[in-house]
Length: 386
Image 1 (tube, rainbow, N blue to C red):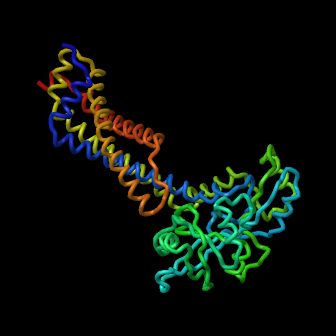
Image 2: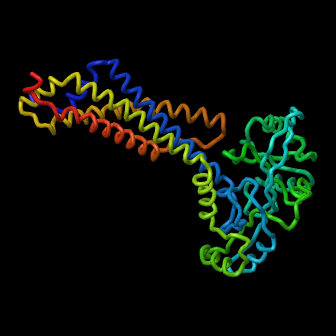
Image 3: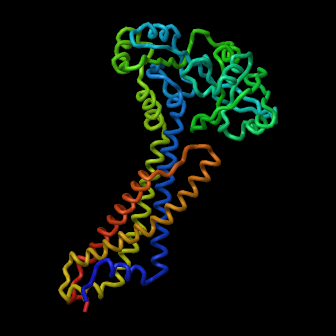
């Protein structure tokens, strides 16, 4: 009967169930750690650009000193109106951003910082403002909209809105009424958010200069080339603003979190640690297996089986451990993703691309461990063993 490396590999790793269980748990833990790190890293980037992708625009103006969207430095509003005069520009919208102090409507003693954005609610680029009724209400004095996906620490606003239709509270020590909801979600820098009209924004932040804006949104005429118009604006407008396409504006935010904060590094380190842990566990299991079956390997070698055949046996063990350990790691990761999304409102989603990436990393991790364990096998001498 012809011996097959895969069959021999399975018999060896399943011969001792406790050792197999330890190996599977080690691989599963590594898979879980990698999935969690990659999931939160992706959630960080996806959540940080929610505003960037939800607003309607083709080009964005920001301050050269702006790092990320939470409370960025402002720039003169007339720069945006200068850009409005360029050929191909259909409309412009000034956007005001600041951090306000929100008072919990159910417990006035509690207050939290909240992200506040102001703009002209009739602008067609702001689909977040909802239907025509909400837009009409938003134009009234001291009316705001609340993100229904904000964290629960801001109070049971959504439930009270569903029960009564409106909620009154204080924002920056000013009485405001929540007249509607929108859905956007939290991020690592924003726990909750409010949108309101530009006039109400100025009432909430009276000490601000009315000519200062944080973002300028530019909509282009159909068929216009965003990059060409961007270059034209850059050539004519003073250097106290940056002009970015939508893709560049999104990437600007991602680059901040990836390169200017330790968070990106920490997630990358977590992936590396997961691979290292899994590699050590699998190596120890495979090395012990080779050591325990050294006589059997020597016998096969004496029977004429090549060193390549014996290496295939060990590498098949590594591959089988990778696949078996990947399954529970994936299932536990799906559970953690679901729980974390419910608690944090962060966009933790399992994608097939991430699953394939982690499976590939798991196989690579176990293969490297198998190659390291082969060092013992290469030195097998049947004459010395017997």
